[in-house]
Length: 428
Image (tube, rainbow, N blue to C red):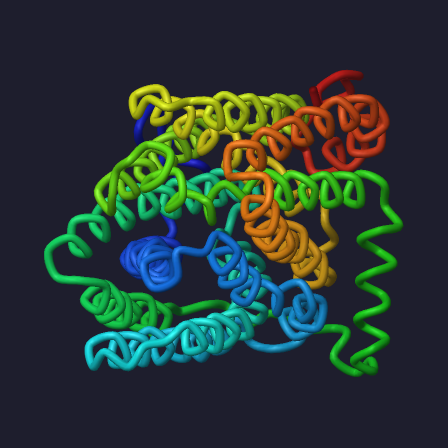
């Protein structure tokens, strides 16, 4: 089906597909609740303990399963029905949120509960993330609109990131943390209903007869044997490891550095969401995957510089501007990497490749959260973010030296797909 129209219609072209519209609407509502819960849990941990280390530990607990188990989930994503799998993962996520709400409403919540429930949601996400990322291709009939669908996913994700923390900041101040957990649990009904309403064409699964471990090894060889995929994923892992650590330290900056409270935390996270939303809209407005290579360098530089300046800021206005930059840089790098990878990957290995993408993006953030909490405990939160920002900038400079080879190797694939013609420098 051809890509419709221009202007706003062109910007939203992936919404032309019914299944994608259902996914976009249901997931968008659910993600608002997810962001509410994430910021609420961080605030609750810091209120109960006052420990930056425990903030990092909670982030580590929620993300380490993704790092360990995502490759196995990738094999699962290539061999089983993705829609039914997502219904299961969303139902389990709902259960986790409702348990949190009950514990907090009754006053029995303790830090060990939060660690255990973070581990539980981490196990669910280890399966959910690669399956959900791979599922997007099943919702968009014209592969040329895949980049737009991924960018609109980022718009959805970061629109939720903007609204969720802001709503949570207000609700925590008015009603306490339990209400946020309850609303998150209720929000999962939207995506479950949307998934059940879809009419997805069954995929032809060719590799289901292979042993499970053989499929896992094949996916690893493919992912790390092709330099463009390998280099993009490894660099994404570095940026995720160092660049997303600021999220777990936001309660420290909101309360102790900028001398605010839950409202300040909501504003800081909201600014990050606005920056990310702007970045996602910018990517959605692009006509093609062509030219994304340069943003794999520029975006992490923006992120790194923003974190360094933010770490020295003691003024709310300047801090908000830097969070705009951090959000923009992070989402443009993540979504650009996702788009390039999903465009060049072989279809029968998509789930396994995306599982390594999930390891890099979500899994490495696991160790980044733990490291950030530990460093902040000893060096302080500002010094920690300075180090993280500088490493992101250094990584971007190293990746810049790899970019010419990546362009050269990707060019024949883009020509075969009809994305570019015989021009030597289309992927800049």
